[in-house]
Image (tube, rainbow, N blue to C red):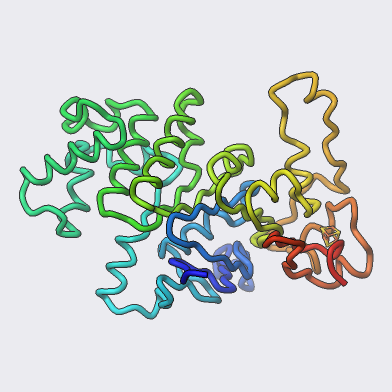
Length: 331
Ligand code: SF4
């Protein structure tokens, strides 16, 4: 097995909630003991409902948040123990694409200004002429042609899909090894989504970039990470993990089964025939009051009293690297 490019080892992140004068400290554990590896040209989809910790995990992987516990290793080195030079190299190599392309571009800056800043900062270009040439190349690469029609425009003059292409061009401008894509198409017109996903896969093919693809939409995650792996998160923990097709076509964890059973089919007759899994409760517990044992036990129809609420299940391999954290498969 090659050395992972990026590895999260038992990473947790807790946020303090509420003001100090309101009483004793309360902590929300947004990410709880998460581990995974990412290799060159790899794709890992992190999927789950909002609040499950996937965005926080992505920010930790990109070095934007420091974990409370655990380690983040880039090429085997703990990123929080790197020297200045190593840190700079890591931050260049791991780029993040946010959900909202409008918020990630400064509305006061032209596309030239937004894209030239990282090029100068990382000394990829030295003069304005070089920057214009490089940006034209990047805009062509992401399908914004002819580039002269875009380079001097402001973000508000572009469509949502075009803005997200600019954001992708900016991420690619510094030759990254990894892109953390946080819901990259959820704010793009439905008609443009597939094109953006194709573009990202093409860039992976051409430049060997690896992706952490964060989404609440299992169908999009399955499409994007069909040749990679998927991790399903619930209340800050990975509950199921493995090759994407195994996880989606043969889900083992009750939570993954519940998520998949709730997805409508394109055929309305099939959707009507589909029976969503009946959960014991529809309420997602608060991060301030995490259930004991298996965090899914208050909602799980397979709950075993005295076991599921007493002991937290660890991830166990049910075959071919397909890991599940559930007492139905252990003890
Ligand atoms: Fe359900 Fe128990 Fe499995 Fe948790 S450990 S998912 S409560 S069966």
